[in-house]
Image (tube, rainbow, N blue to C red):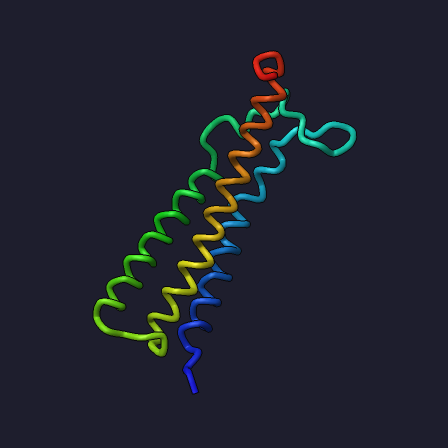
Length: 125
């Protein structure tokens, strides 16, 4: 039977770091101006156009993902296999934080591009 200690530890770490990231990013919603239908009013909301905590968290998550990939590579070169708790940990962390980073970056870019399109509609046809 395969030990699950690496997956369990990685799930706990991912849950804790994910919760910390959400607590840091969530208060930024107070700075977002919404119209009467609840949609973001990009003409009055500037938060997506400058460096914020969201961008810092994306950068930290990306660096953490690179460190996990490096750790995974080192332990694979050492000869460990999937039964090693460290390999399990690094695989899980790489997947989870790689996905977090990618989704956060795509969401941020979508908001920025939508804001640019709504602020300067005559420039884009």
